[in-house]
Length: 329
Image 1 (cartoon, rainbow, N blue to C red):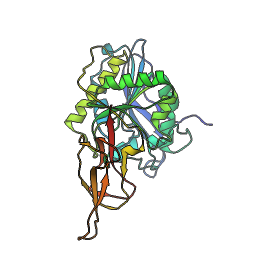
Image 2: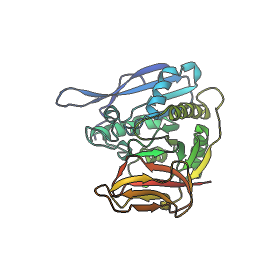
Image 3: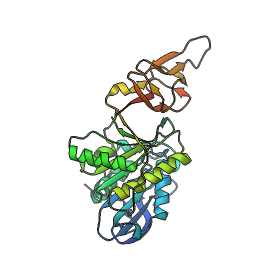
Image 4: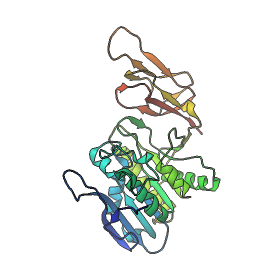
């Protein structure tokens, strides 16, 4: 199998601050010998752990790119012991288009791992991260939020793992991130996920959902900026004390957490993010969008807990996730 065509324009393992690109050759109509230029920063000081920090896994989620662009210009070699690899827009074509998936190949980066060195643009990026960057890291932080279609209470999360020692390390890193909420998260569609690739390599992994709606806020950006520095301090890479405030631990134990629509129409939110609900409470209604005089369909919580996520656009389609109810631990 041919090797990955991506080449870095900077050294990945030299002391100092290096800003550059991962250059992926891509021949297209407007540039026969063109390239996709994926921004990357590497900051290194001596021997020590390595952190891989990624954002823009989905191109319409912005807390990660904001926090990582800020870190790339503010973090100095003298602040750390070890190495920090910053990839603020992993799916760079999607990030530039402001879309969840790549406009080049419709690739969803977080369903494209482990990737392929001879595959699509998205698969080549995934393969490079999988085979070149991930093996260097001892701890990985991947920023997410809800993009244009979902909104979340701000949380950092870990997954239930077979290796309980690894799971404990991930949970400790999530607690160090110190978002207002911390989550043990159930994934309903984990095939091809970056998360799984990271965990399969035995790494300590933290992911987030910090908001949504295809934008970020001053509040969500503050959480991201504080969290990434806390994780670096927790890993023994960055000097200084963790900045810790209160955090509510939540769990998503099973499919009863999810409320899916079976109808097309206009959604009416009945409960807001962070609201506590009882099993059977109405969390949303779907009104017919094409006529008056008909009552809406009520959608109810299948368990008691806290509304952790909601559908963001005003219109909903059958099959869309309308709400997630998480359980306080």
